[in-house]
Image (cartoon, rainbow, N blue to C red; front, side):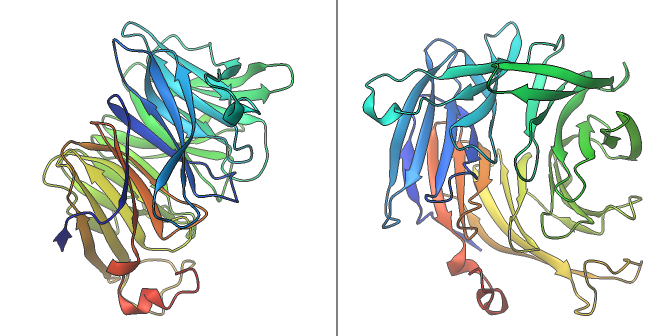
Length: 357
């Protein structure tokens, strides 16, 4: 099912590929997004959905050094976020704080809380502790995983431990398990690996090539969803890693991002270089199969494309659910266009009866 977007739009001045939900802002539906301009001064925009839900308002506009390749919001402090940025020659990562009186300044400056400066290889992403207030951060570059301890009061971050992926693998990204905070999943060009942060050792792996995006299902502790260049979207049961339990066709070109809904199990968003965002629903066909039930070879899944949002003019790289209003999501296309959409009109009747919707 395809259709033009009926969403609420917002335009950035420059190209961009990163957008993140401001989870810590429990009073507003807010997103942070950063630009990717090689020649101009880059920007971070704090965007909020108006109280009437009819427009996106820029609540803060901040200068940022260099091109922003990754952006993640602190889950417990709405004024703090991390970025990975590049000058074209090298990559850096830092944690920033939005000034307290940013709305009263014509040109507020971001405060650098800490520089994650232990990296020697190309940095791919920064991950925040997935639940509650904590001082731990993870950063991943092509060769290593770093566990950091962040001290905002001293404006410093110290490496607690690190581990190399080995010369044969180039790390490309990762996700922190919200159900077991000792586990982090990382992706390479040929596999998905799982690491125990207590020992910084690999605990499991599965061979699967060219995964570009990975996300844990926050409602089902056994489920993981991945997006790969050419093989579309796969849903994995972490207890049975030999093969995915369900496969979705993905996009007509590269599938770049995939996100599980933060509140409703089985709802998945994907974005691709075919200038589209797809809304999927996937669940075991057997109604008696619960999240704690062991899957078997006869377990069949129901997968359906609920809607394809196709009114974009460029590749869609950025994708984020709203944690405050989980029936809303924000997408970001490379031309700097942000769109916030509601999934309510496209849900099956049985999902519309859910209390969150």
